[in-house]
Length: 441
Image (cartoon, rainbow, N blue to C red; front, side, top):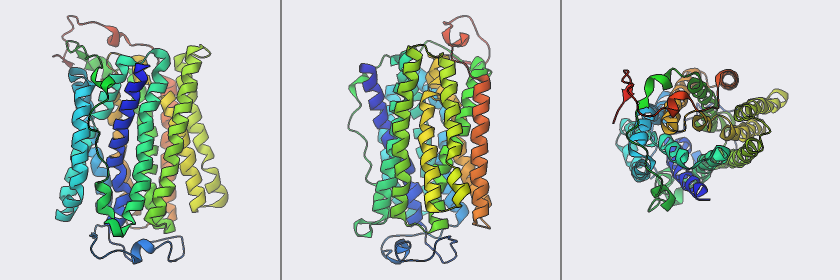
């Protein structure tokens, strides 16, 4: 049972990480000064626009154009992307527990400094967001390094799902509480949303007692970066994270700009799907581990089953859009369906790093997550370019279609090239291999 306490402890780390990471996606709707040129599909009414008319004069707002806003939303991912591989190396050499201790202290401090940074200059806030990404870029490698020491073959899916449930719960907390706080001007409005998340006082005892990594082992970089199964994970993570980040980063803006939904309601609309994602993630992982333990399917076929189900079922979410057109209910149904099936990744793509490279799971998870985190940079840029001149339904339709197509291509690539057996380079002991690219102690 101790291994599950490790997963739960890592889950809480993820909750805090995502709360401080995603808060700005809602807060920015109140940080930016509104103007009358905002395009909306919804008619004016007092309920929809109370965030404009009731704005307290003492709460600061800023004249940031759409490109500046998208740059701010994407800034986190610049630091997050570049730190995945170095974070993997640090996780192998230092172990996960040291890194997690540093991360949970630093990320709360950065969140507390954000309102001040915004008041000084948007460039300073962008810099803080990049630094926040650098720090949180070490979380995934550290977590997978810890899990690889505790998870047995028939427990990998459920342990990973428990950890990533923290991502979902963090999304719920950030979306709902940020929406409430940002719209509550009596308690300080959007600046207060950056102060409410605190780091835990100490690490869980099971994280502290995790066995140390064998620091004398070398990291076979050449073998890892030329491995087809590793690239299968990387491509699948890119595609599914592209869709995830699109819904996470841009859909709140879509609700606001196209339907005139106020920030409080946006928090509620975007928090519900995250709850569903956590539940489906845990259930699908439990089913996957049961299938593997009972040997109904091989590990590889089980991973394929859930990745295909996730993409195919997400298509169902587009049916209301096709039948009824774009409205709040149709988009919310798509939002819920996508997040529900996104939970299936806990039974397919996410545990696959431990399937193929148990010894280097932290590094492989970090390296492949590099490509996934690039989506956080790409999406705001693409969105900013498409809606900069014309914030129209047609432009948003292009974005939704692009997201679905990338998700489908990633599924096909994963099914074609993924494996679920320990690779030779993961099992090899220290030897005389001196090829260029190995990182020694």
